[in-house]
Image (cartoon, rainbow, N blue to C red; front, side, top):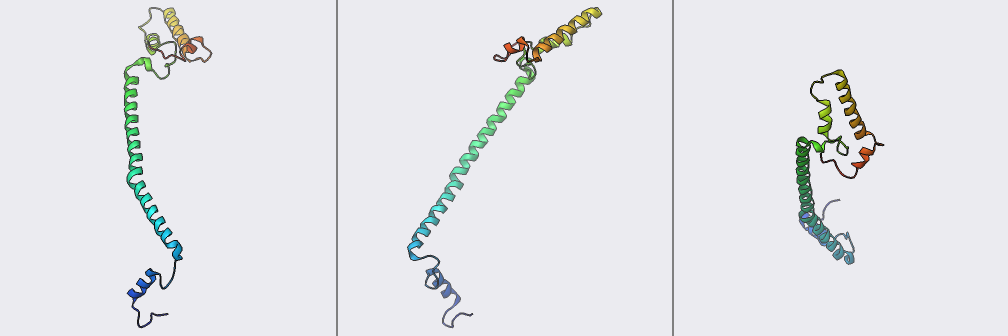
Length: 144
C-alpha cells in the first residue's frame, strides 16, 4: 500500500492532522478533548510547581524541628539526671539511687547490707506497678 503519485508524505501528514483523512474523534468532541488536555496540562503544571514544593517545604520544616527537638532532649537526658528514662515516673531520683549504689566503703558488713536493702527497696518502689510510691509520679514527673 503506497502513497498516490500526487501526494507527498508531508501533505499526507497534514491531511491526517487536519482530520480530512481519518477522524480520531467526532467534531463535536474535538473541542472538549482539547479543553480536557489543556486542563490536565495545567493541573499537572500546578501540582509540579506549586503543590509539591509546598509539601516538600513543609516536610523539610518538620524534619528541622524534629532534629532540633531530638538534640534538645538528648542534651537534657545527658546533663539532667532527673530526666532519667527508667526512673522518670519514680518516687526516687537517679541521684538518690546512685547515692545508695555508689556509696563510700562501708564500715561494717551490716552497714553495707542495710544500704543495699534500702537501695533495693527504693528500686522496687520505683519499678513495681502496684507500688503506691510509683503511682504518685504517674501524673507528675519527678523533679528531684
